[in-house]
Image 1: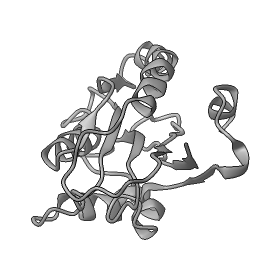
Image 2: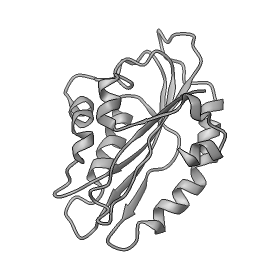
Image 3: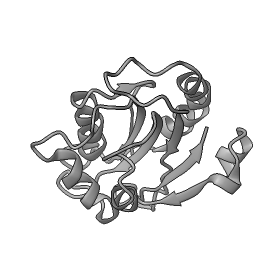
Length: 178
């Protein structure tokens, strides 16, 4: 939240939550307005999602389209993993690929950070360069979507905390009106 405040986002309208909590709130399932999402997703074990994102994974990967294509969703993903394990950054790659399959628009290249070498080699430059594209993504009109409501876009910013092992990092989300 400190970074979002530093970049002009209103802390009084911002809350943090895990992706499971975002799933419970149906942020992705039935968005009322276009939104922008920044997702930080760790991978642990054999390519597994962390516990606080398992419900979101089930939601995202079910066979029927889980996102109603009535609003535009723009997103970016920072994937965290460790090349010493199989399926490096698989959780983040799964989120990225599935959101694209569902018609969401990636506004910033995915970062794949490796705890096997140094997460900071990717994480810090990725975050530093994120803010310009995030502002542009929020300023650009959303892609035309049939049946989209005429509403003001909002953003969903997902922030992560990386533990010492990197692969068991935490996920979170921040929601604030634009």
